[in-house]
Amino acid sequence: MRPVLVLALTSMLSLLAACDQLGIETPAVTAARKDTEGRAIGGACRHAGRAIEDCYTLNPKADKAAVFAGWREMNDYMRENKIEEVAPLLPPPKPAGKAAKPAAAEDGEAEAEEEEETPAKTASADH
Image (cartoon, rainbow, N blue to C red; front, side):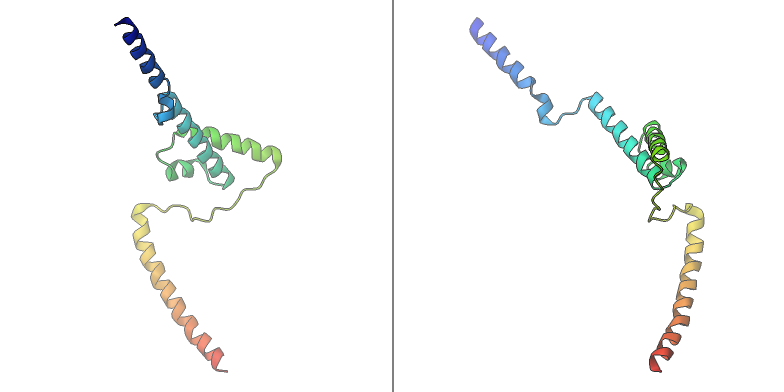
């Protein structure tokens, strides 16, 4: 009975030793991943020329301390190496309450501009 017990314990220990290969994350690994993601987000926001507050608004689930650390590291790096900001391609987010009314007005103005341009284009094409 003793050799069977030793064999069972040895096989159980060898199986449990490979738990990290199953993809089970420990709390330390999860915290390190969140910190790294936050730093990457902060660095990207700084490189894009976004304010830290905008970065927090665009990434509400990211850890604010990690985002700030990444933003600050990228700021120091850009100053030391004289790197210019890259202009963001997306417009800044609009407040929810004010976005509905101006958007409708902008659509009406855009349609009016298109109507004004259309006769001019057809008139110049006829000549």
